[in-house]
Length: 329
Image 1 (cartoon, rainbow, N blue to C red):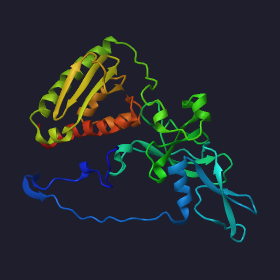
Image 2: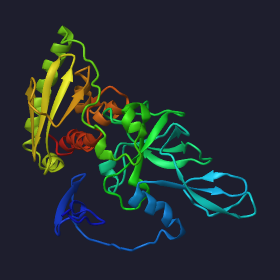
Image 3: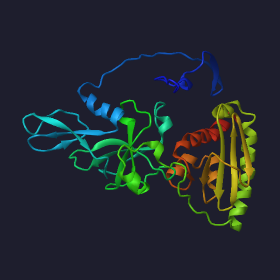
Image 4: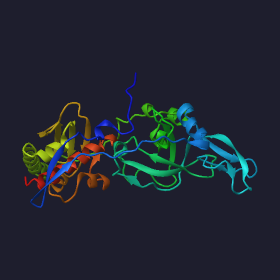
């Protein structure tokens, strides 16, 4: 039996308690409090659209019986162009093209943080005259601004667990799917291969790269040692465990997160949780020196990670240098 989920995930609810903050040499007491309001809402006359997503894995639109205009989603039931002629529901194909180049969201509020990064675009489905607002993803690793472009062919994919919300569906590039997947109606996210992205090639190891990596590994080991004595940095990693294989032009190394501990290991590790590829080892020096975060390196395509879902791990790593600086480590 599936575990019941809460509207607010339990991990986002703070424990009863207090803590002392130090700002500019002054001590302040901070306590955990709560102010909340829960409510229910009906989808009203738009219920058929959301029920079709939830129960039948179908995208519904409406067509004017007079002028033939097809609108999706069915945000109105009477045609404004034909003196409010009543429109009829129709089932639409699940393929189309991007109506514009979507912006990418890397920083979202807590309810959507587990979904980042995602694109927010509009898809013009075949046969439709209006575009469907939708999130977009890629199965080829981390999502960057260059993956989706205006006019790209995409397919709508359905979440395995659907609630009857707009986020029950998302779009992926049609070119990333097999011929069978492209044709299949009601394709679900679990039927896609999210674990075999095409990894960027890395030259070397080059003599310059080896020398740079040796210096970087020494500094990374120092950083890991400072984490062991910083409560603030340990809090950033609390409850998190990841084995990250990093590949550079200087050779491979691993970043190992074990609850509140951080460890650096040269060489390769077996069965890492995900892979990072950064051709220039010095980007990790830039990260430690506050010149460029790992997040920005990914956006600029200097750093690649194999799983889009591991972006939250990058956030946690980006907090470490800041936390160490604030504690004077």
